[in-house]
Image (cartoon, rainbow, N blue to C red; front, side, top):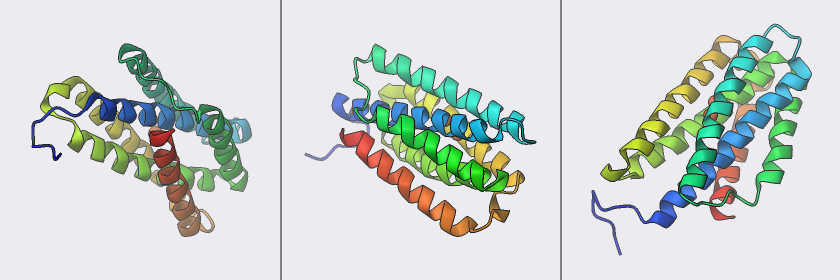
Length: 178
Ligand SMILES: [Fe+2]
Ligand SMILES: [Fe+2]
C-alpha cells in the first residue's frame, strides 16, 4: 500500500530511523575518541574535542528518544564501538588532514541520510523533524570545519573519502536492519 503525502509514517519505520540515528551518533562519538587517542596533543585537538562534544549531545538525545519510544538499540553497537574507534585512530595515524578527510566523508554520508529522513517524516512529527534538522546543521558545520583544516589536502583524499562514505552507507544499511 502506498502512503499519501501527510499520512502518518508507520511506527515501525520511525523506530528504524531512531535506531539507525542512535547507531550513527554512537559511531561518530567513537570516531572522535579514536582520533583524539592519537591526536589528543596535536594542534587540532580542541577542534576535535568540540565536535566530539556535539556528537555526544546528539547521541544523548537519541538515547533518550529510544527510551521514550521503546525502541531497542541496534544489535551492532559493540561492532560500531570498535569500528568507529578504529576508523578514527587509523585516519588520525595518517595525519591530521586525513582525520579531517574522514570527518568530511562521514558528514557527507550523514547529511544525506538525515535529509532523507527529514523528507520522510510526516507533519505530526515536528519535534523529531526539528531535532534532525538541527543535528544535520551541526553535521554540515563539522564538514565545513574539517574542510577549513585541510581535509582535501590529505594524501589520497578522494580514495580515502570514497571508501569511508561507502563504509558509512553500509553501516547505515546494517543498523537499520539488525
Ligand atoms: Fe552527530
Ligand atoms: Fe558530526
